[in-house]
Image 1 (spheres, rainbow over the protein chains, first blue to last red):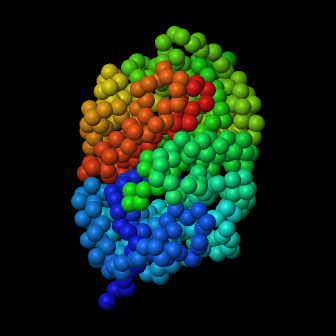
Image 2: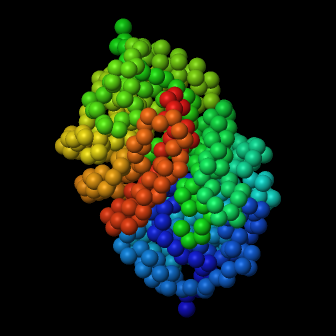
Image 3: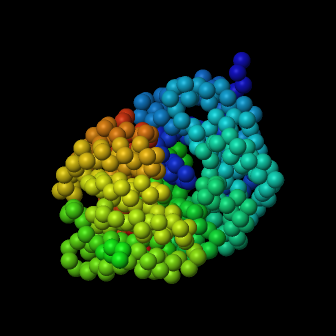
Length: 239
Length: 239
């Protein structure tokens, strides 16, 4: 029997709100479990025990994705938690791609998996100091090297909450400069419990981030972006 | 003497708010004159006589761009009006690229110029019915064919104000389908005179547009995006 995959939620079609394919219509498969515990994580339910995973076979996942899509969507995003904790997603990726889905991945770059090479758009999002996590730059470097060697369509994306995070991103950018690597900065959402509309406060932060990038001589092809889904839907889960 | 170029404004560095390189730090060169008269044009001052162009040599333009950049920017966006009315931008493009600038172009796809082949990111934005303009699909097709043959990094972007515009975009997408062509839809701003913050009303329209795309079986790799600069700065000119 194929290994089962711990899934927290499958939802969509919706719009990818972040990074290199912002605006892409997609269905999210959110896996359970994370090796990180970011202070501001907007998906703590994937690791804090408040929500339980369902163990699903690749065939069950494909069926659910096809049902949600109903012909309206040809893109799937695998996010977490950290999907890179799952050693084999090969069968799922093969099934999805056989059905015509392109697949995106979101992972922090703390672990490599060979199935990364089957991904169509891959986002590595190292976590800045405000997360209280520590980046293993050597591991990150090895991952980026393999992606590059294999001509995978990938990007680096760093969430920015404050000046210290920006400095971290600058150092990382110095090590992995654009435009050799696609680079995005993203406004952090530090109000992940609010049920309010967050647009105005997030846009103020986005303006701050844009101005930091505009003034910086090293941040040349680094693209600051807001989280589109948070502008639209705040912290609502499942959109 | 090199031909002079009718320039309406040069400003930046700022953030490209639209389309395929949304978020890219860039300096805008806005040329004077347009073959269109879109009802909702947000840059009417490029053709309605309220603002006069300056005739600038390529060298003068490069000097102004370098001064504004001051080492903080390596990207220039040529926009209008319709820059494709200008028969030769070759010298300017060569000068900019020699200085290390990548160059983006925004044009509606009503006229071809051979200098399009020197552009690094090129956006064709055919105008939907709400503009009161009529698309010459044969000309558009020839332009897109040449861009494709020459492996230019281009995209198609349609501004959407209403259902009729969406139907127009669907028909155009049927003729030039994604993902062979990068495709973006953009929320229209129908309040180009307001000095207010437009974010909330624009986000409502963006949600409407996302929902149209989400529900549509043909709009698969078509990415709806807001105008980021209008979310941040409303109708302010020069940002």
